[in-house]
Image (cartoon, rainbow, N blue to C red; front, top):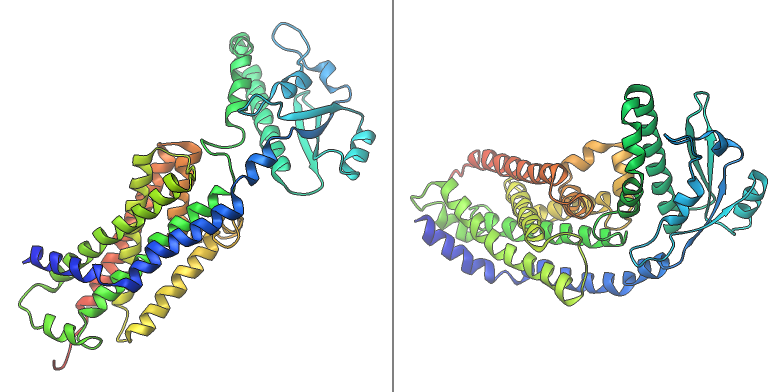
Length: 392
């Protein structure tokens, strides 16, 4: 019986042109517009070396390595390159007053200052005048160098016997900074818009699961009057219908992913099997959200569709679909929103796959999506059990 219900709802799902439009057409059209708007911006900006002022004063004269030689901070910074071999920084070593003048005139994107704290340990600081790609790169570079020297300080205070080995591997440490300081496989910050687009496409799958569940409710659709008279367990019936919707919608979201990846050439920064896994889980989260909303109270289909649309659009806004920095703002001020917002959870899964690759961060995203989907289905099932009809 469950198989027959599955096949029937599979056919019904294919006839839902409205729901398929929001999954397929919306994703492809908006993806094309994003591609036209953002394609090539990052590559054009990142080709140029970043004009940077370096202020060291007398600090470097007191910084020595394990053999008593001066640490060449300037040389290390000058060795940083892009993937294409071009120098990352156009470095000028100047005095503090000269650096302030260069920054004020817009001749440099930032000023890196190196001083010594009260314990004679190096302290890096960055001064910028405005935000931009170059300033973001400088922020990460300074952070990486500070972390490296903090680790050196830790070795000096706790494991001095390992200092010689640390300096012997110094070139490897610098290579690590060069390879990882901007991002993961795809360093383009504009790819975040495509992560959010995929999240929205996955959540629009909820429209079809909403329609499928409402179709089975006697107070909304005439079909529901007949299905409620069928001697089949209601939970089996609804889960079979939900599985059929999921299959159709997963095919649709996969087509959108293939269009973005293979036709438009958008680099999501992860291996294709993992991208399909994140899409599959995102689709599951979308259809389970529609399943839950469909069982909220004795409301008309239009009202439930409005509730679902508001949830989806607000979630997309807080996840950064309309402004890519919004997700970071929420993470800083109200992180719980990013944990329960389906759009943010799906977006973070793609971001984690790009930046960190398969690992703990990606595993956490997978767990979040499965957990949220389970919660949505559980809530929908509990609400559905409370639905009773005086007559049919």
